[in-house]
Length: 275
Length: 257
Image 1: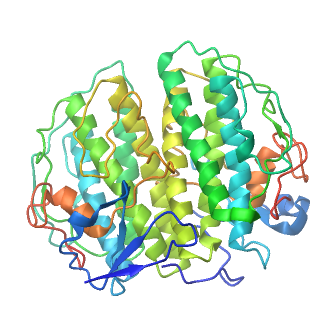
Image 2: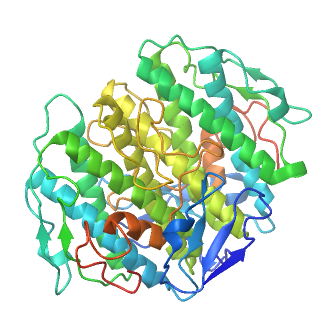
């Protein structure tokens, strides 16, 4: 049972590692509204990927705030995969009363049946996550926000594009759960988020390997990202640990910058954690 | 003794059973309810170090298995503790040159060796137990390697998934969550190779979802979550029953065994 609330006296989410040390990139912090996102420059060799320092969230955030943050990401994933596999978005009944519009998605003409099969599983899984989070939130569930599925200008024209986008979304999902589950108060919210973290990480492990197998060149999502390569199948640093991101670090990726909206979320996320 | 706990009542989806002690006798029979894994906690007396030690036993198994598979040799003696148990059945695996299996194995070996070190640095202090690496199948063939690795990774994922919410300190919570994130990535990749190489598996228990062409992921059909297994449920798999055996002929070291 997790009983320890986040405290300003314990700002570091990452456990101390004897094999790494970190230096804060204070320059970036100054550019981030609210100061909740501190990307961290790695103090070690260039072969050691940098990991973010995760600072405590703003006081007063509650479990539904975080679950809605996760729900926004699940909407994005589910919508991308629904379009990729069917050419249509998720059911209207799962979008809330006043959902935003989705743009840029299209059915992928998969050439490799295995990629199509994986896409179908991703679509089902993320739809299940939307359903689960909406059920958990009940009347507090955020509506589906406006989504630009073509924010990276790729995703739907080939197997390789799809895998590139899926890899990015799963990596973000993994790091979002890993960065915020620690701030949840209720045991059930923690347990659910941890099991969803496991699902996102399985997805990441699969899609990262697919990217490597097909020799797809992908770019880093941010300074902390470790893109899949022939020597880096997994997003785990030298200590074999998964990468957490703060909510702001997640937003920096899905908004395409440090603003309050953009990229995948042209009108921003819905809910409380939106900037 | 089992006490029903409505920990998850507000999500209305799952019931948890809490044990009043660690013995866990009879828990294996309680794994399934309404098609879902019922999660039983390890009990209020399990400390974070107890849980770390439980995890370290699993990481010893995996690190040793991958070390032998990739090099034919065990992990460094310095990492095994003062009085490690004997390891039997370890052997190098013959990997093909076309699939990504050998590189994957090397990454698994590095990651799980790092996990042994991370847990020891975090306070886990049990010696490496006696291990029978060939308990389910002899080491040497790539397909057999994938089948065993798949089992190990899925079991580790489920062990960490139930462990994270039980951790007492924030640092310990985050460490175990980060370990989970890596193990689940491992599972996702190993399962993919199993499908590609037509490596089939019998279910490990009632909650297990072996990989196949429509199950790249080991996620339950309703919520698409990973399974969370109690320590007793994990032991039932790696012991092959309720008493020490299979991969751990003399059992785990530590308080949860």
